[in-house]
Image 1 (tube, rainbow, N blue to C red):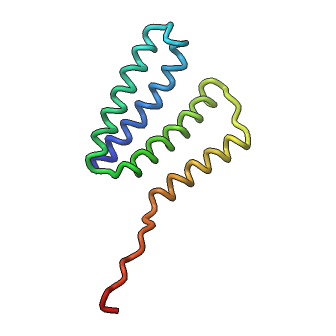
Image 2: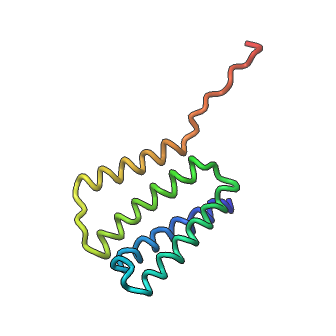
Image 3: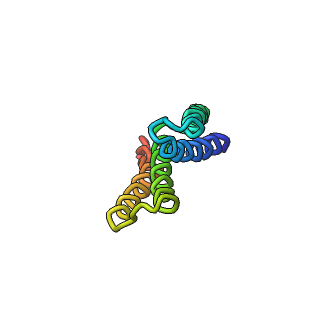
Length: 114
C-alpha cells in the first residue's frame, strides 16, 4: 500500500511540475523554474520508491496515464484550453489502457493431473 502512496505523490508532483513548466515561460521566470526542478525531482524520487513494491509496467502506466489526464484537465480549468470531443476520446482511451494494464490477464496454469 505504501508503494501506491508514493505513486500518488509522484503523480501530483509531476502534474505540479508541468504546471510550473508552463508558468516558467521557457525558464525565464525564476520561481516557477525552480518549482519545475523541485517537483520533477520529487516526482521521480517517489516513483523510484514506488517501484520497490509496484511492478514497473503497472506503475508507469498509472503514472503517465493519470498524469496526462490531470494535466489535460488542468489546462482546461486553469488556462482555458479547448476540451473537445477528440480530447475527451483521447482521455477515455488513456483511462481504458491503464485499466487494461491493471487487469490481471494471466490465465491459471493448467493442472498437470488433469
